Image 1 (spheres, one colour):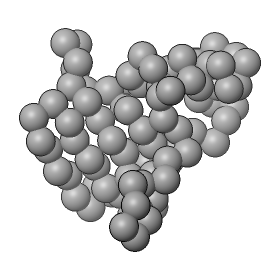
Image 2 (tube, one colour):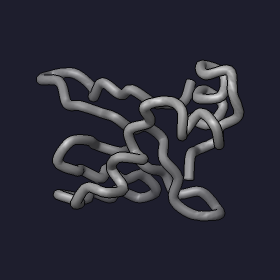
Image 3 (cartoon, helix red, strand yellow):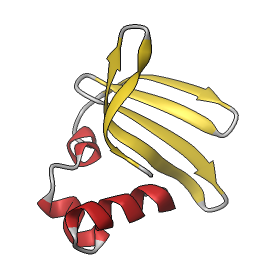
Image 4 (spheres, rainbow, N blue to C red):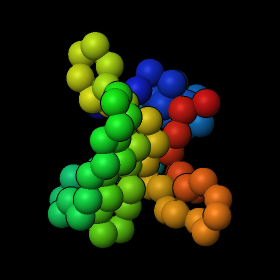
Length: 87
């Protein structure tokens, strides 16, 4: 579900394996799974999925779509601010 860089960043910042960190930390995309999709934009291998309280950025890998960033909020005239992203 997570892109490799995002998984590495989560494990490094939490100091625990990804499987534990996802449950222990306030990982935004876990909550988004219960929210309704409000919009989807796809451009080639990249996608943005908008929920009422969150935005996810995805990329298509050889084994499917994976999360590049989550917990993202738009900022006027600037890139999104994301709580979880790869380094």
